Image 1: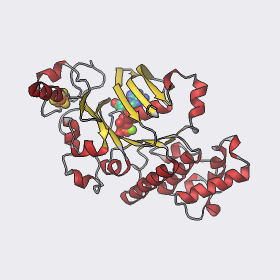
Image 2: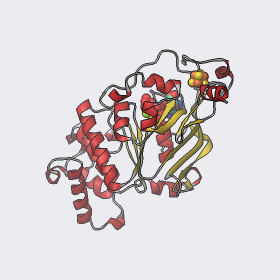
Image 3: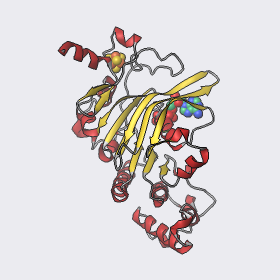
Image 4: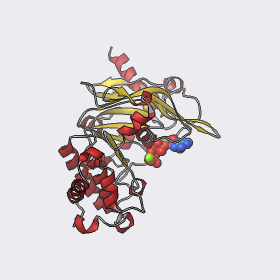
Amino acid sequence: AGPLLEICDLNLDFGTPRGRVHALRNVSLDVPAGQVVGIVGESGSGKSTLAYTVMGLLPENADVTAGSILFEGKDLLKMPAQVRRNLLGDRLSMIFQDPMTALNPVRTIESQMIDIQHHDQGSRSEKRARALAMLHRVGIPDPESRVGAYPHHFSGGMRQRVCIAMALLVKPVLLVADEPTTALDATLEVQIIHLLKELQKEIGCSVLFVSHHLGAVAELCDRVAVMYAGEVVEQGAVRDIFHNPAHPYTRALLECDPGRIKKSTRTLPTIPGEVPSLLGSKKGCIFRTRCPQAFNRCLQENPVEYHIGLDQVARCHLLDEERLVSA
Ligand code: ATP
Ligand code: SF4
Ligand code: MG
């Protein structure tokens, strides 16, 4: 069987008064069944856009200009809107950076957790029992006495736990999490990451995990894709990428000792130079304005994906040049 989710050559523009913003360029990425795939990259690199494209939750001005997203073998981009909507909160669910995006402020947690379950998941009291068990599972103390409360009665960390409980209550096969811990402090973040990892193993779902925290990715993910200015510049197994990064951008991100990444609580380091405008032409390597190793070819040609070893790919002309030298 192929991967659960197969994103192929995805291109997406946002229409803006200043012109078309090329927010995703030739993005190809697989999420194998039962695996956790991280997406890292600095602010504005297109992580959320990619996550929302998979979920079918894009704003009006978004325009997918090319590509496909196969989910269980069927192209999400070609599905009738209703069929696609029915996948949400069923086979596919999402956790957001701000838990209030998913929670209704004027309804109790209990009623929201009951309603999110399918009509064939049993009676109301069965659904209530399942909701309580799940709240208990995600570490909400004494759920029986708290389930009747409204979202604002919970702290930020507790609200995110409620959202995780809601997202997993429907037993999704793919969970998309867009920076679920960014709003939390470091201690809470560690707890939530551990919780996600345990639950992912129990349920056996795949996860697409967007983060700009490398430590969280090292902890949680099997694979990682590094995004820069709308492109996936490198991807592969976490182990390979963190120990043997091939792309100059990934190398810059990992400047510190890879052994320390897991323990670090820091977010991405700042890299000098200017991020290119996403408005202009697509000529040349996307990283050329900041790359310490850029050469002539980088200004003319956008590099293709080169394979390194069995399972790692990176978009950089240097990998081709090495090949030419050794040939
Ligand atoms: P962050 O880490 O800050 O969440 P991100 O990697 O999630 O960043 P996106 O939100 O996906 O980045 O944005 C990618 C690019 O698309 C950015 O240049 C952003 O300005 C642009 N963009 C996002 N949404 C829209 C929109 N609705 N209209 C126009 N441009 C948009
Ligand atoms: Fe740097 Fe050139 Fe490689 Fe782009 S293709 S990352 S500019 S060396
Ligand atoms: Mg984002």
